Amino acid sequence: MDKLYIFLKYFFIVVWTVFVVAPFLWALTTSFKDFQSVNGGVTYIPWVDFEPNLEGWKVLIKSPAKGGVDIIEPYFNSMFVTCTASLISIILGTLSAYALSRYTFKAGFVKNNDITFFFISQRIMPPIVLSIPFFLFLSSINLLDSLTGLIVVYIVLLMPIAVWIMVDFFNKVPREIDETALIDGCNPYQAFLKVVLPNSIPGLIVAGMFCIIFGWIDFFFAFILTFTEVQLLPVKIVALNSSVTPWWSLSASALVSVAPLIIVAFIVERYLSKGNLSGAIK
Amino acid sequence: MAKINLSEVSHSYNPNDPNPVFALNPFSMTWENGNRYAILGPSGCGKTTMLNIVSGLVRPSAGRILFDNKDVTDFKTEDRNIAQVFQFPVIYNTMTVYENLAFPLKCRDFSKSKIDERVNSVAETLNLKSFLNSPARKLTADQKQLISLGRGLVREDVAAVLMDEPLTVIDPDLKFRLRRNLKEINEQYKTTLVYVTHDQNEAMTFADNIIVMSDGEVVQTGSPKELFERPNTTFVGYFIGSPAMNLFDSEASSNDSVKINNTLIKTHTNLSNLKTKNIKLGIRSEFIKIAQNQNENLVDVNVEKVEDLGNYKLITAKMGNFTIKSKVTRETEIPNQSVKLHIPAEKCCVYEDNKLI
Image (cartoon, rainbow over all chains, first blue to last red; front, top):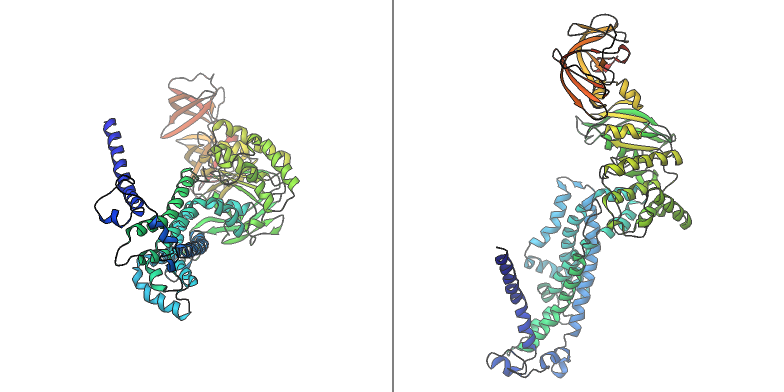
């Protein structure tokens, strides 16, 4: 029984690993191939099946004038927009989540839970519903095709995630902590900043991670709301495609665009597995 | 340190309802500076609400709270300079033990040297000295509770330290030592301590004044001796003491005696002004002994069982329909069947409508 269990366990782990890692390996080898090695039959092993070259990678950093596509600027644009929007969403989202978790609001039949649901409901709508309103809105304030405009839109998309995660998290932080801080002489703001917030770092990290992921991978709004001035990475990568699909540079850019998320995932996993989530009570 | 005055305080959690349910019925009370108080009552009787009203976490629906004759009803918690310890330890997870203990002083802008001195002295009292620099979350549950307690004691000028069943998570041996520690702290610093508990032993050994509550009502306030010997109501008689007070339905037969199952029992209570027939006689099992050579207040009972509880024997006997319990010394010889018990008149309490006459 035990042996069977261990066998099945490792079997599934191996299958799952192959399932997850294979596309990356595929992208990695493809990024070093040339036209011949991609289109001339199946090849796997560098130097044996095909001669690796760096053409696919070089294209990404060459300026368009020299026949490259230059993804460096879109890369930093993406990073800037994602990080700024995530940061603002986390700050605003955390504040509203704390209020929703600790204070009672009532406006007619609308209560705390309804407000929380209102935030989440923003993500239930298919994004396409929002595309025309956003377009008109940004064009009316002259922010189409600008980083600021994108940041504004991304905050709208990311804040619900932050609120949702943090409300849940604050609800699990015992109220006695706030009360004790008040008794110890903090005012409510100090209680929040000095006591509740430091206790909520794991929640902040999870919320931040989700914001960064959803901000980073968004293609739809970046595609609709920008044209020539500003380009984000996902849009640029899609634009790489032409009559002859450049599999090598597409693979390279895909790897480059996934890299930051992998790094984020590793850091978060390290932090969360340290067990810093355990409670302050008991 | 302050004298705390609760004047006509009451609280309801749904005050706007046409028929509000009161968690705390109107009451007035004074807590003298430097005394030890215990609030005793079954779960859900309003003990915690009372504490939260004093600390300012709950604003009472009616009534005033005075600290040293200064009205603090509208003061926020952080301005009342009060300490509260909850049932489960609350610690600041992200700080060290030292930072935890120093936090109340830091919030109030004490000088560094003063903080150092107070933290060290409190840590000494609570045996936390060797942990001062470890992260607070690494400690065991009872050590964490000591930290909560320490945060309450670290301010010398604190108006009162309120404790809401603080020793629940602590093991019995340490419990005993901590209670003694608390007493010492109270004697040394003259800090007013208020201790909420549902455990009568804890209340009796800790406090010099006990407030007994039931159903949002303060039923009796007094020293452990008063509560034990002269319970105000049958509830207090029943709730305090182990076993509970013996209570018998009876009828008045003269100005100072009652009849139980046709046995006349003399009391020291004047029964001439009775208004109802709902009369009960209460007597502690500690005062009931096997009759030696007394010739009145004797009852004939049939012994049902005798339990040897180590330091005393507990006799459970039948007197007609009534069960009577008597606590006697271990050495007492107890006849197998029928026996005469003596009920001392001066220890009898007579209750009319469950209230002491």
